[in-house]
Structures are given as structure tokens and as C-alpha cells.
Length: 202
Image (cartoon, one colour):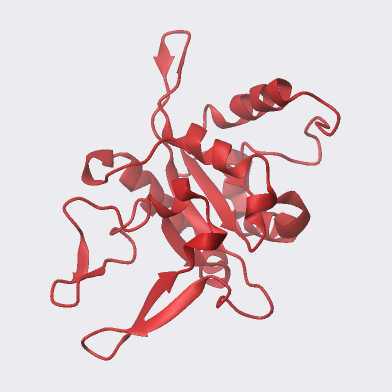
């Protein structure tokens, strides 16, 4: 089953990847609820009006895809969009559920080492950690936050890649190769929020 999605991204940096994601969604792109070329121009409007339009776009979605890019901190909206995604919002006696969220790591200068820190576990296999300085707290605080921890390895205390974090980080090539896999996983976690210590405010 396809899920209604919203893509949160820094326009000047990640527009091409946003378009690649929509293309990769194939027929499921009809469920995409975010900004398109037909969306209203919000360049010269108030903060309150921008938030209202974004809320209208996001309210009926169930999964938010956030593009993790090197200068995402320059965006005025990404952290607010993630906060809104994680809240339960009531409108006209209907309360929206918490969105699933998946982070797509943008390839930059040919790789992902701008964000990824590679290590080795007790079995000699590769592990990944991440530079928090590029990410909003509401994003990194919802990574490695399963409770009790969902380990890949109890001995190494390494988190399960897909389910150890509420917001899984996925390299763009892997996400584009199988977006449904990661969107479905994010949605499934949104149905089991009690397994995670969620940070809902930016």
C-alpha cells in the first residue's frame, strides 16, 4: 500500500534530489503531497502564511522524507517541518497520527563522508556514526532512540540499521533504488511509536 509522503529539503541545495525521489516513487508519486511546480509562490509572504500552507500540505501525510544535506541548517523550515510531522495535530475533531520519518543522505562531492563516520564493530564489520553538527537536534535526537534498544549486535551494542532508530538515515543511492522499502519501514515505526523515545519539539 502506498503512503502519502511529504519531502522536507533545502531548496537551493537539494532540489535535484527531491525531483529524483519523486521520479523514483513511480506510480506512488501520485500520493506525494508536498511542493510542486504548481504550488503557490511563497517567496514574498509572511511566516504565518508559509506555515499555514505547509500545514495544509503535510496534514494528511503519513511519511516525511527529509533530505540530509550539508547546508540544511540554512533552511528556515526543515526543523519546523519535522516537528510538525512528529506531532499529533487535531483539526475539526480529527487527530492526525505521528508521521514516520526517513532521512535520505545526499551525496556530496562524490560521497557521504561529509556526514558519515565509519568505524569497525567487534566482528570486524563496518559501522556508521554521523556528524551531528550538520543535523538539527530534532533529527539526531530521534536517531538511535529505540527503547529498549533494538540492537544489531548485543555484544557490540550497535543499533539495528532499520529499526534501531525512529529516523533511519539512508544513502541516496540506496533510497532511490528501493524507496518503498524505506517508506514502508518508516510508516511501520509510526504505528509503533511506543518503542521509541521520541523528541517531538525542535
